[in-house]
Image (cartoon, helix red, strand yellow):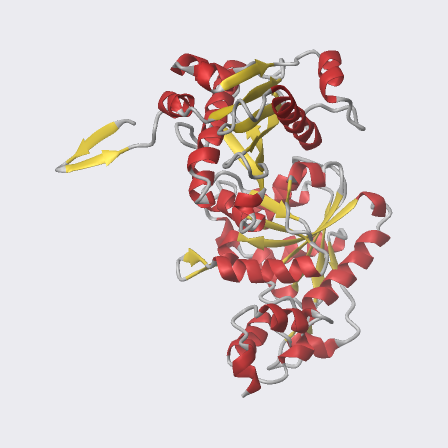
Length: 482
């Protein structure tokens, strides 16, 4: 471990990659295999170089040839190799071999593990930087079932050799963390970037499983990636497991609804239904290739300067119960969200939002950090095959219902606004039940926390029951009975 002095204090930095590998090697109980495809054997090499590797490495291999790989691990339905199913097969196969070839009677105290990665580094033309899957299956007790950590990374460096070295450091961090930081998954996730920088790689998905991680909510681990600056967007499905955005969004038509969903209300679900109808009626949209996303920004999760994780999980619980895919992003501005989606698809996209959100889009103050100002932002936003669906709002003072026809934007923006409206980029949603327009999430939340009556009727069917049953958003059953 590197030591540095500051004043009279001794400051310990993170352990070096070599010291991490050596500590693993000197542990007589940790024993396993390394299977690495696509970027050499960079992780195993760190263990060999640190010394005493014979106590840790049962086997190190790289089935680089596709035919050899298929002969060992079988074939995939999509004939791809850099995938999560491929990684899982590698981990399972190597553990099975360990159990089959090493006698438990001879090694009663050994903690078996298999580490694997399947990656593709930067291509020759340097147009595609590469990505990969990395994972470990491991024991923390010889009589206990295996635990597993699986993650996906995207390379940022533009040199294949540097990418290989980065992968090797990440692999050591993962193995070290699995055995020595497993009791604190948040610290374990942070440790992935030990001796690495955010300019070297992005980690955009992670899942924990196994007996030692039964208490871990993978949605919360996904949030840690975002909080730690390891990625700009994470996604999880209705089952609570994290999803790889690139895989879910690849070549898809994408409809996105942004909101606080604190909690999800009848307005949110009506906006969902109306925008879905509009989107699927578009000639360019194939329902079979459509992905609908409920998106929450990281800033929307922040209160009093920090993220309330309990509040985040409450929102996630409700959206998952409705069968929705949820995305958490670091994109406060819509054009950045659209740019992100454009990395994975060129198909038709749509944003569903309230009328007041549209006013903000046409507000110049949100684009002062751009050299080209609002015109640069709009170029990035509307240069894609994009439409914006507008849900009306109710002006209580005037009694008016605000749509694209009477929406007021800054005088300097009026002609620009007219241009996009007349070109069909801005589309109104028709609302049949206008009474629900006066429902706001913040009002419902206040009523729940203060035990006021009537909030249940403002929510979609089944949501109030879920809030009561799981005591979400500060709901108290005992207080409610009084």
